[in-house]
Image 1 (cartoon, rainbow, N blue to C red):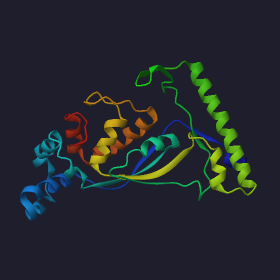
Image 2 (cartoon, rainbow, N blue to C red; image 1 turned 120 degrees about the vertical axis):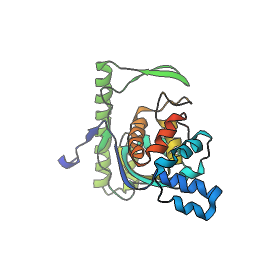
Image 3 (cartoon, rainbow, N blue to C red; image 1 turned 135 degrees about the horizontal axis):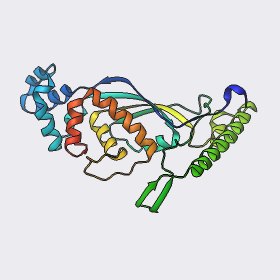
Image 4 (cartoon, rainbow, N blue to C red; image 1 turned 60 degrees about the vertical axis):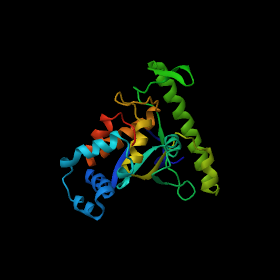
Length: 242
């Protein structure tokens, strides 16, 4: 492995809002076509603060489709195992991920941060995570770094021998970082957040893996800035997608 291909170890994730067409007003004009028909076009430029009661009504009574008439595209960089969970969200989502067939994958790998809880206590379906000891964290980090380094060395050796990228990538672990664009609407994002971010205001229990929750936290912060009234209604009514 050459010096410029030395592994990089990360404990964080990247989430950037690339583009958006998403405002609280989008919810209002989409909803008002039900009762006003073509006159609903008058609401396109409306101040949503004057009709936040309508947004709360729609959220409370779970009239969901008005929350679909918007769009957000995020750039996300995270470990592959996060994306394998992420791609289970299919309705209202579009994805394009970097390809190990068409580009040489870079040696960026995930290791847990010191505050990442490491010890699982309880049986499947009824368990919780406890803080690990410094020794456990050191063991986990050292084991991951050794395995990652060995795997990437083998990957580089196959590429140098002329083996196709799509074959050589088989030795790489799911702790490798990948990147993707993910596009969704507010309704699909709310469903994602209800499952992938733990919050005491949520009516339904959720048990997200910490690494995908880190992605969810960053996405929610960006969305809340775009649609603050919708976000507030989501929290007020139990963090359930309408």
